[in-house]
Length: 167
Image (cartoon, rainbow, N blue to C red; front, top):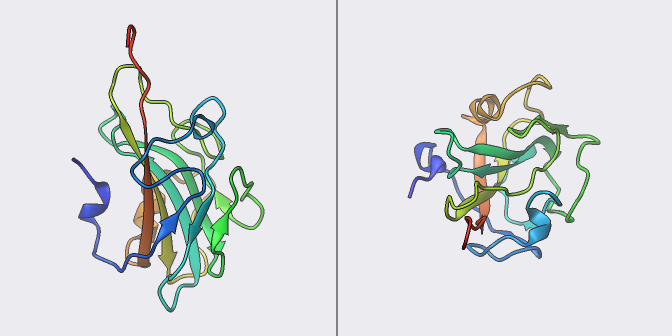
C-alpha cells in the first residue's frame, strides 16, 4: 500500500495518540464531513532541537494521483504537546488552505464505493522556528519547505469508508 512518507529521509519517530480514534481504526463520524471536527491529538518525545511543529492530515488514497490534503498547520510552538478536538489553531499558527478549499480541517469524505481510505495525521518536529510560507501555499509547497528541516515525525492513521449504493 502506498505510503508517501516512505520517500522522505528517515527521521526519528515519536508517539502520537488520540482520544478521538485508535491508530488503524475507523474515524468517528465527527471527524468526517459534513461535521469536520478535527480530532484530539497528543504527542510526546519530540527530538531535542525542535523549534516548531507542523500538523498535516493527508488521504493518500484519494482518487487524484496526488492524495488529498485535509489539514495543513505550520508554525506551532515547539512545547505544544496536544490539541483538543475541534481546536481553532489559527491564532499564532499558519493554517493553509487545504485541498477542499478551506483554511481548517476538512473531514473524511471518500467517494461512495471507493473502499476504505487512510487519513494520516502527522506531527512534524522542525528545526526552524517558522516555515517561511505564503498564506496561499499548497500542501506540496509546505512539504517541500519542511524537507531538510524535519527532525522527527509522529503519526496516527485513521480510516473511513463511504458505502456505495446498495452496500
